[in-house]
Length: 242
Image (cartoon, rainbow, N blue to C red; front, side):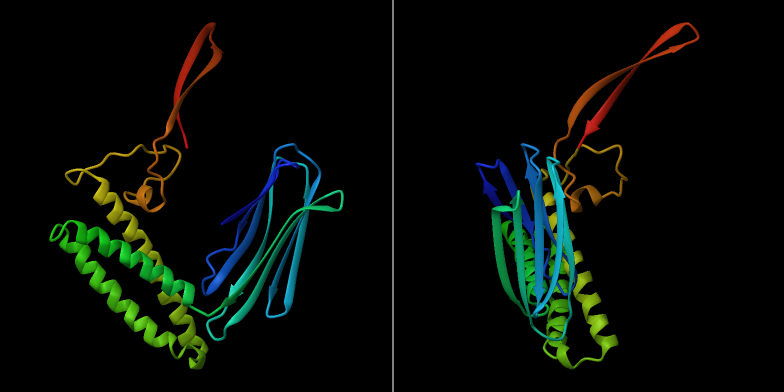
């Protein structure tokens, strides 16, 4: 994520390029328009010379626009990303980025980074978590098999290429989730930890950890009044704000 500011206009843009993974991605820009000025956001995505353009005009304090894009697993691609914020047809913020994307390169780099984090967590307390060490071996083996297939991805039939994409996606998801679990386990004293829960979100056992829902929640009190059978009811609700 990249943030660009214009202090005079009191506006800024958050630029998100997406994961740049093989498969579906989203190029998204969020505008913070604190003075509620009438602004126009123009996005342009260039993929190997083919352009996709979108724009939105708004005076809301917060608005956004996005462009979906796909990275296939066969050939390298040249991407150009452009975001321009205008006020009365005058450009107040402009940012352009270009990438040369090798299929699966970002996927594999992120998986290896997470595996390194898991390994570091285990090595800090030797012999303390055999399960994590065993999982690391399994993940590393699966990664090795995937890398061998990626080397010949350009020659794979469509069905095998689709299976490869799915294998990479699943491994990246599993490794990312396990990395978060390992870090949470490291932070917990004596293997036990208590986190505040969001009563409006489904409870899934470890979902709070893997979805980063472990931050301390603020507690607010609301008082609602209602008249019922000549009696006043005071309903006190403790609500957890996320």
